[in-house]
Length: 256
Length: 256
Image (cartoon, rainbow over all chains, first blue to last red; front, side, top):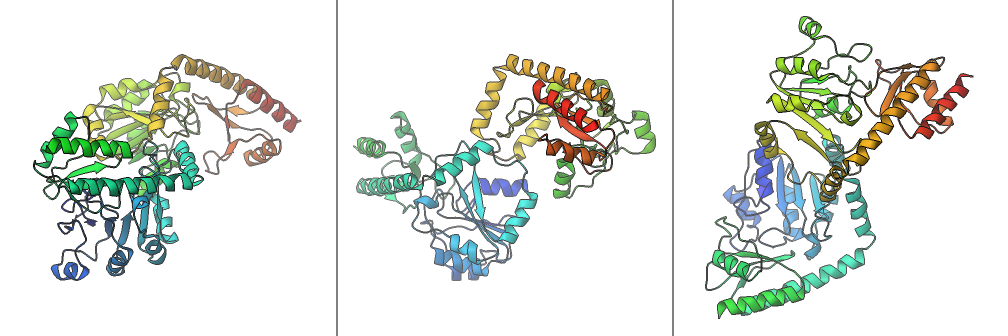
């Protein structure tokens, strides 16, 4: 099983856990230091990638790096992979591109999505797969019979009746993300390009873990990961414009 | 895996399906014709039971038979079974006895319960296990991370704050069940003893499947199963007293 990119990736931390529960052999593929995907040529030469793996996960846009991978780049991979590919699009509503065309074109490619992020329904635990009817049919046979709560389904359907409201939210969030990124860069933060509802940043002057504490003392909660690829960085979730202005103001005060 | 009693039992129809999904060897144990458990002595002699099975399911009270099994009888089994025993108490709120003492006493025994039946929360999909901390701890490690919807948990907890309301409901339902059973017996139905919120009955005069149609035409929906052990019977869910009076009245008209 390729979990790209987990745990050395790094990517969504549940994939290696779920693979371990199933006793699956894992083949985490490391990302480039800027969280972009290694070039296809490099993957093939370096034998980093197991193109024969039964199951491959690619989180796009990725967490905690924040990068979204281009459809053309993903298609290059999907063409070479023999097993099932799950393109985890949990954050896709904040991205420039989505990979649904790949799920519709390649019979072994599934796009997975959730209402937990962009639609604020994390309490409801509703998600879905898009893929070839044969593959979806096989999964349907073995999935839990009562795997989704009825109210959750009603809530998820209701969001689809109100898409313009959510799309306005996405635009506002993306604008706030870009503005926050620009302001943090001016303060000396390295800001990794994000197509998600968070920013991964490498803070100046103090170690990232110290920033975590300094911000926490000022009642701003961000996320720090101890994994070696990201322990110099912080993940900052995008809130309202006012909340992000406060973050920038507090960051200035810390740097002073 | 002993699924007692599935599918030859008969019992909850999902157990053989789930066992098949896992590729588990199944050992369904047939019940007596009146849906009581075969005597322990008989089970041992006849080698019906695999006391070494890794996993044993016993639904108590059982469906669709409706029988509840006594704690003493169940304890005799739990003492002999080496593997994990799941006592499925989905219908326990309509029963005379529950088996929690067995889960607290025997480290390999789990009681499973649901809020879907007696607490009317089937839309929410919330259930729970009671068992030894070591066994529950092992299951906790491998269960889905986000397996219960948040609103479902809130709703389930709210029922626990309002138990007297539900207990009144259970008493009313049990009284209606007993009254309906007595009336149907007077009309010539064989009524199997029930500790659930339904009655399994063997109707007189016409085959059970004809009764299904005749009742449906009069807008009364009951359940008929094609499995050989129960195809001569109907499962009737207990509704309000008025609904059950209507059922008895319609049954009289059909018999006339």
